[in-house]
Amino acid sequence: MKQLFLIVVLSFVAIAQEIPTKGDISIGGSFLFAKTSYPKTSMSILSFSPEFSYFVNNNLEIGAALSIQSSDFSNSNTTAIGIGPYLAAYFKTQNIKPYIGIVYTYVTSKSTYGGQTFSDNSENSLGLFGGILIPLNQKIAISPLVKYSLYFVKGSQLGDVTQIMFGIGIKAFL
Image (cartoon, rainbow, N blue to C red):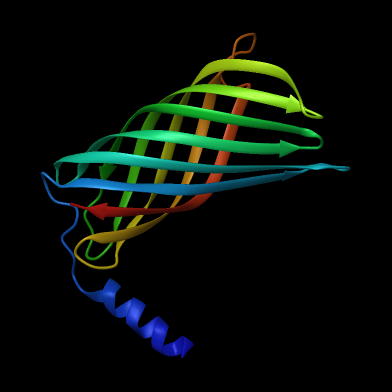
């Protein structure tokens, strides 16, 4: 049964797909994850980012993304919500399309410790991301991706607060 499932999935990928194309509109999103371990504790970050985009041409996408992120560290929890535009460039290959992009996000965050709010901030971030768009059929594609973000936090210099996350995305083309 597992072999049959694998054959079906690979057959969809093997079919030459021409997505995205100029004028395509897509809706989708990504799930990203990062975990950092320390000697006596660890920090986990989970991010969900729904997005909407338009393809200016076959290789250039412009869009907007919402970012919802939750992180846990010891007894503290931070929830961050952000929104911003992004731009992605795709490279033409046979069946898959590698891409790179840049995203600007305005973020508001709330941190709690032991159930009490101790921080309520807003900040900006600039992120670089890259991945591979893998078409499953004429309207759906998945995308493993990596994202590196720099945060502009009050009281620190650019590059003091960074984040690298790994995940998977999905796009539906309308």
